[in-house]
Amino acid sequence: DAMVIQNPRYQVTQFGKPVTLSCSQTLNHNVMYWYQQKSSQAPKLLFHYYDKDFNNEADTPDNFQSRRPNTSFCFLDIRSPGLGDAAMYLCATRRGQGALDEKLFFGSGTQLSVL
Amino acid sequence: GENVEQHPSTLSVQEGDSAVIKCTYSDSASNYFPWYKQELGKGPQLIIDIRSNVGEKKDQRIAVTLNKTAKHFSLHITETQPEDSAVYFCAPTDSWGKLQFGAGTQVVVTP
Image (cartoon, rainbow over all chains, first blue to last red; front, side):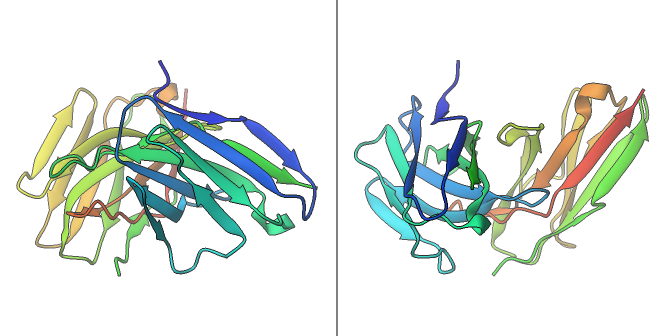
């Protein structure tokens, strides 16, 4: 059973048209991450939530925003997608309840195309 | 910040042979060393991990070895099978759960 679920699997948007990607988890984990992965590259961390605390990476563009309305759901909003934002977007979770719980659980990702 | 180097970037092996991928890191605060496998069109999945107080860990055909003094750890796959074809990432992690992915290794297992 999928534990980190991302919808949709594929998303096509137009240049400059806002788009929202969603992630849900059944693990009740405290930490949720959003990664951007471009072709043949490693995932790049955009930001993460520890519970309700939002942590933005220094080099994440302002064009990317996130919301976490409750423990189970987290959203990635791209306010004005550019062609360079076409990528796979990965959601991941981590229990985050102390030591020995560093394992990340990834969803299957949303492949975003920008036309 | 953490500097992670992963080698090789691509690895082609004959089915049944062994594959070894090496990851070198710089941050001495790293104390958790996982390897993730990413199949085409899917998210990365943890396949094996090791902690800083252990030198080697094995799980069936895969193993991870750690040399903390030299700051490197390696993934070993024995008796490779076509389903081992994927991209593998190392991701040294510190106590706060902050990790840095290596650049990835594309493994191709040819029958």
